Image (cartoon, rainbow, N blue to C red; front, side, top):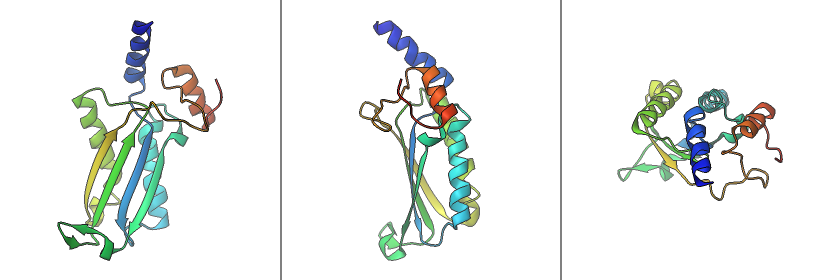
Length: 159
């Protein structure tokens, strides 16, 4: 049974190398327009859906911070964006995949942050999915056929 579970995990990681992500984007008040937020969240979502994950897995929170509450190196700033990403469903299995994801992520951000002259920092946390639930259901991360169905319907369903 243990070898079966490891085989499923290996297959899942090989064919679905993305993860359930939560993106928290801390930014100056004027950094993003409503259309920027929509476009950036769509670009971030595409990083995962093009790998087969359901769009509803992707959560992007824009958290505006006033300059008198945003400090870098002990100095207030209105030119810095801090992004924390949490991955739950999968972990990137090796350094090459981590590098590929980071490059794709940076490319998604560039028109909204780098190209507008902001400094930024991104870090990705790979968190155990043991306590993760969607509408009270354990996500089918070890059952690729059901996860594909969740993606097709774009919502969690019992299995």
